[in-house]
Image (cartoon, rainbow, N blue to C red; front, side, top):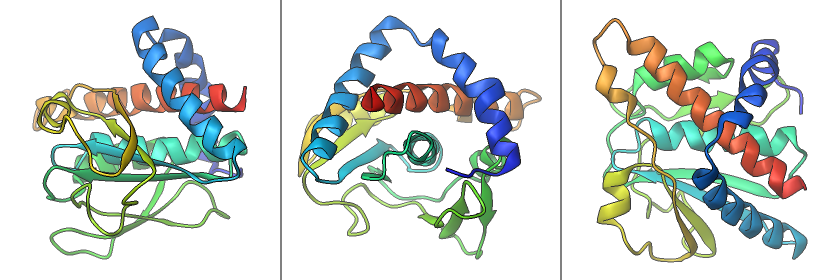
Length: 207
């Protein structure tokens, strides 16, 4: 993986050191997910992960992008990451700005629900990120792991059609700090938490 210099700095100076802070109970769920990924890759099949929150606007996008970045960092070519919501809104610009500060590069075509093209490095293929429901045709319809990144979606979707594995991995919504002096710091902290857990996940796949 060749990430942008800014993203490389974020990974080595902030993300990897934060892996040690992941609580034991979350490591259990992440290890379950790592086993799913490892088994798929060992069978020569793609390992598809769909991250789900209510509006597909903040946490699920952060998880999708950080999981893809971590998989590339550890050389796991067969990992495919997606995101969706129980309803569609738009990729929140505050989350976009936070990921931009971490080093991701965004191309914004505009519109009410922009289909961002996102890169984590100069040679990486762009990922198309936009808000959609988890069952959207853009996402895998079967054989994937559903990762619930918010408590509300976790409660409202006890069953995800087509998923071979369902994992509850909720994060506190950074929306709670919108339009406050703590907004940027809160979004960056949530991004860092998600990043560290995705790097822990992919490191366990790598073994």
